[in-house]
View 1 (tube, rainbow, N blue to C red):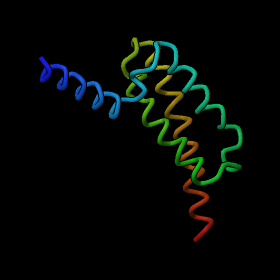
View 2 (view 1 turned 60 degrees about the vertical axis):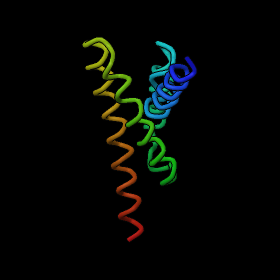
View 3 (view 1 turned 120 degrees about the vertical axis):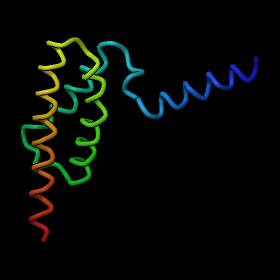
View 4 (view 1 turned 90 degrees about the horizontal axis):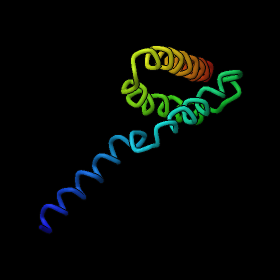
Amino acid sequence: MKRVQRNLLTVFILFNLFFPLLSLGIEDWKEEFQDICAKTQDPMALSEDELRTLINRCDKLKPVIEGLDESTRKVYLKRLKMCRDIYSFSLDEKLMKKR
């Protein structure tokens, strides 16, 4: 019995380590999406660390959106990709200017 509980606990911990956003509520992904993409108006004003963090957040949110129904998935994946691309472009530009 303890072995089964320990295995379940291990699976639960691993699941939450590798898929942290999947443990959010149904609509929490929208809040995360809005928070991430809210900073696209002036991405060059963000620091390199902020841009890297936003890119990582986009990458973590992508699998959550991929699990949604088809029409929602198509719209939000496209929008998330656009947000990620602008942050990535801005980071690349900042790094190029440093050289």
